[in-house]
Amino acid sequence: MSLKNKVSAAGLLIALGIIYGDIGTSPLYVLNAITSGKTISESLVIGSLSLIIWTLTLQTTIKYVILTLNADNRGEGGIFSLFALVRRRKKWLVIPAVIGGAALLADGMITPPISVTSAIEGLKQVPFLSSISQSTIVIIVITILSLLFFIQQFGTAFIGKFFGP
Image (cartoon, rainbow, N blue to C red; front, side, top):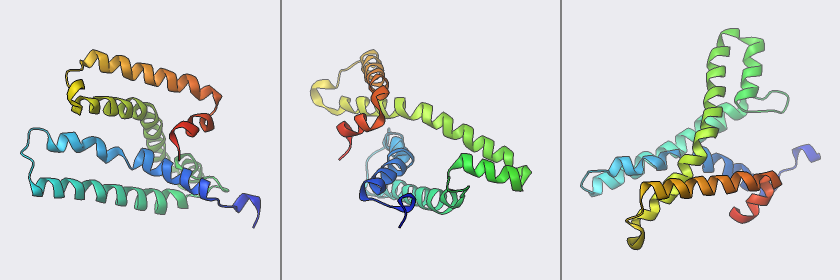
């Protein structure tokens, strides 16, 4: 087996973390919206969990594993490789590929603030932190994101040591 094709447990864990850590967690943000203002019942809980689990499974399995990973452009994958492939073969597919690339970039910009904000807003569930103000949440989020982006200059592996297994 060549070095190029060597698969390690750490590499698989990183790949799963990327897929389920970013793409797969998106349905979890809707949990508050699903239950907000409603009486919590067994059918609401089962229906909500079913929706989230099926979205996680179908979205990551079908869209990313079956479709996106099969778009092989000389060993490269993803939406930008898909763009390179369709640009050569089917010119009319360039516009959906560009929209996909723009959505990927937009997702990369909006996901970190939303994730950190959701986590910090979750602190309101702790009884002695329930009165935390929205402006305090914003300050905490900006501080955390600023620290993460500052530390990122030392490499993502450096940050991964703190948050990874």
